[in-house]
Every structure is written in structure tokens, then in C-alpha cells.
Image (tube, rainbow, N blue to C red):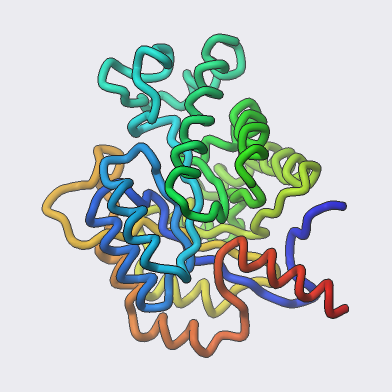
Length: 301
């Protein structure tokens, strides 16, 4: 039976997620504060990142926070040692950030695909060892849009209880408001891949969001932008993802030089945002909460 992709007629469900959980203690502090405030409902964990152990410990003390796996195959640290995946990482075990070149290699080179599968499996295993229930899986830089990587991720994930995957499909109007023509062009370029990915996920019986917010304005959320999205949330399952962190003297990584992490945390802690969420007529939680809601609705119908 195909998995549910939304909720019944006019119903709305919101997932508010922090990505890069485990990247730095300042990220973990922000996740803990926003989850404790009742705004953040989910986080995506980088199991190989420097502060992953700290993130896992905090997550165990936050029973309402749903945690998923944020697969890292670019711009981050691998779990396996470099000698086992020499085609993927440098001598220090770090992936590069050459997305187009690597996309071609994943498709064309069998040995690279074998190494990728080994690393993806190692990251799933590391998450399983955390003792946290697996709420969802997505990938850093949304690399799971790559058909080869998605197929490997789903095949391996099936052995670890994978039930939900982020579909990086952003409403065109929101992308245009955040990034102008670049946002519109990106949406048009990705449309065929997103359609294929949606069909593939449904064929595997996996759930996904109907809408996502955060691609065109990555690292640039503030109170007003978040309030606007909450006020106009469409029917179905929406995921808003952010990159909050407590204030830092320097960028958390070289790829985040322009990110306004502390402003994103301020937005999540905003009294206006908390009031809007409290007064909203939509359900909230993680993907696993949506699954439970769907099952309950089916049982009552």
C-alpha cells in the first residue's frame, strides 16, 4: 500500500527541524534551547561531526525532540577511516565540496559507489548505536537528490528502520521571495529530479513532506520570515528547516560564512513565534508523530 504523502483534506502538519545537529556545541546548545522552548520539534544529526556525542547526550534528555540522520557525503567528516574510502575523502577524513564532479563519479565509477555505500552504512550504524529512534533521513547539501545516492540510502536504510525522507521541494513563491530569479531557476531545474524522487519514495512505501522551507533562505531565517510562513502554511505536511546556533565569534564552517545562526535561534525563541505556534490550528511534531497521527486517523475512520 502506498505511503501517505499528506493528511486528509485541508489538514496541516508542521515539522520544525534544525539541521547540522552535532556540528558544534553551539549548534547543540541552540537545539536544546529551542526544543525546550517548545518550538523546535526535530533535528538532523551529523553522526561523524565533532560534537555528535554531545548532541546525542542532549537528545536523550529531550524526549519530545525527534532526531533523524543527516547523511554527510560532502563538506564534512566521514565516519570510516580514509584508508577504507580513499576515493571519497582526504588524508584527514574530510569530504570535499565538489558537488558536480562527485555527482558524475557516483554515477560512473563502481569503486566509488562501493565506498559510498560503505560510508552510508557506517553512518546508519553510528546512528543506531546512539540509541535514539530514527525519525527521518536526509542529506547534507540535499545530496540524496542524486539518484545513485538515493538508491543506496534507501537500500541501506531499509535495514535500519528508515520510514521517512525529506523531499527538498520548496514552494515556488517562497523560493522567489527569498532568492529572486535564482530561486525560480533552481526550482525549475530541480523539478524533474524532485518528481522522480517523489515517485521513488512512494514506490518504496516511505513517507515524505509535501513542502519544505529553507533552501532559498538557508542560514537567513528571522522572526518576520518565520511568522509569514506560519501564517500561510499550506495543507499537507510542511517541514521548515533552520541552522540555529548560539552566538559564535567565527563561522561554524567555511561553507557557512554568511549564515546568521544566532538570528535563527532568536526566531525560534521569539515570543511572537511561540504564540503563533500555540494558536495555530495545525499539528506539530516529527515524521514519526505524523505516522502515528495517520495510523490513528485510519483506525478511527
